[in-house]
Length: 297
Image 1: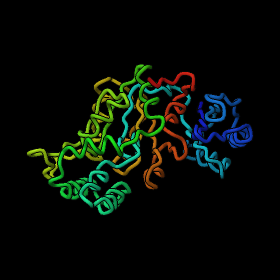
Image 2 (image 1 turned 180 degrees about the horizontal axis):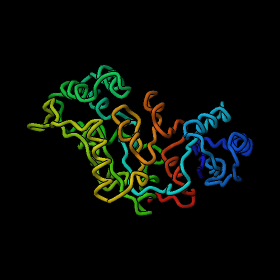
Image 3 (image 1 turned 180 degrees about the vertical axis):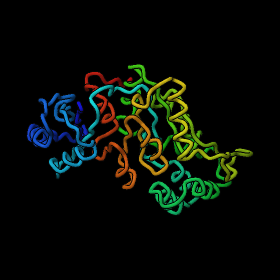
C-alpha cells in the first residue's frame, strides 16, 4: 500500500530537522526522500507498507521519542478533503464557553469540573449539559456578548485551516455541543459556511436554565457527518473531522481522516490521527498543503 507519513511540529516552536527526518525514514520500509511542506515545521515521507497504520504510527512515535513532533500516517491517495467538520470548544477556540458563562454566576470551578468529566467520557454528555445549563438560570443574555468580546480566543491556525480548505472547494461546518449564541459568532469570525449547536432558551432577556431538546451531542454530531456527506454525495474518504472530547469521538472514528486535537486521553488513544503539539494548520499539512498555499484572509 502506498502511504505517506506527515511529520508536523508547532510553527511557533519549529524543531523538525534533518536528524528527525532521518530517524523517521529509518523506521519506515522503502522510504522516499522527505518533501518539505514548510522548512522546519512539516514534511511528507512517502513509503510502501502492508502494516497497519496504527502500528506504523507507533513505530514512528518511538523513533521520534522526546521530540515535540506529531505524526499522521495515511494512504497517499485522495488526501485533500472536500468536507470538514470541526468541534468548537477547546478545538477551534481555546475556551469552553459554558465554563466562561458560569464564571458570571460565580460557579466556574464547579461547572468546569463537570465539563471536564463529560469531555473525558466519564459521564454522559446530555444530562451533564442539562445540569450545567440549569446553573445558568437568570443570567442576562448580554453576558454572552461579554464572553465573546473579552474571553474567547481563536485557536492558532483556525482561520488558515478553514479559509484554505474553502479556497480549494471544501465545505466546512462547525458542529458543537455548545450553543448557537456562540457558534454563529465564532463561525463568522473564522469563515465556516455552516454551524450547528444547541439553543439556550431565554425569556425577558435572561437565560431560563434550559436548552432546546433534543440535545446535540455525540450521536447528533455523527449524524451531521452522515447528513452532509450524503448531501454533497461524498465518499467517506473525502471527509476530515477534528475535535477533542468524548462527544466528538464517534464522528472522528467515522471520518476519512479523524483527528484528535490536543484531546482528552481516551479520545487521543482511539483516533486515527492525533495532534498533540502543532496548531490547527497541522490539518492542512496532513492533507498535503504547502505553507505557500495557505489562505488567511
